[in-house]
Length: 304
Image (spheres, rainbow, N blue to C red):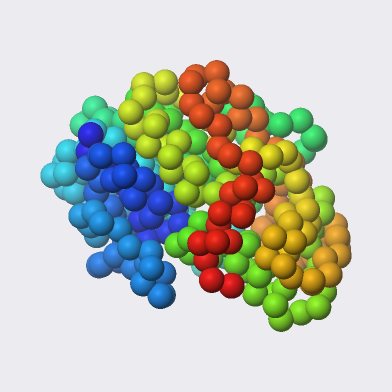
């Protein structure tokens, strides 16, 4: 099977390409840069052909995908700087990438009759209540520009295609890029005490584990909406930080604060990011390992 992967210079795309190759598939990676760029130390490499592609250029998307002729496209590329998305000067670009760019890919997938996996987010919901969000819930009410742009991407995929997977994830961490864990390790090394939000609840997603699921989906025809984060129970960012420091051997003091008390974010975050993953099991997909185990494996992989 030939699979085209967007956003390979990021955390998830990098792991997806490498997992596909490990599974014996033919993978083609793409991103907006002229050449593949990995981590600064050069450790994040991909052993796959690379195509430069600006997904906001509909003609370029058509040319590249038509030439590559993939059996499936895993669309990981996105604008993910949530707070920067709120800035007026960035909004057009955010929608151009997350909404229009996704539609460009979906339109070509339709013409080629190939599968499409679109990576979305818990931010499409309003984050109210305490019940886990169901994959097929249509009570959309994004709180910020990023969430709205990703929702429009979802709608483009579901309106245009029949062979699609929309996979919502949350609290992502991986080797090839910056993330919450790396940030907490940096500040925990620098300061004796850190303040961390305790009223936003969800579960982390390790890109290495998620990539295995997405590779399985490429081979499947059990299409639809799914939620995919690591198992291990719902936690707050405060809980996550405490476990990061425990496993890393840090003695940094962690102080829980409310979102209002923290008060540094431009974009409004959902308080309830609980995602129900039962549909994965119902349709024969393996659930991701516990986040505590994922964190332990990740800390062994990175330098801190």
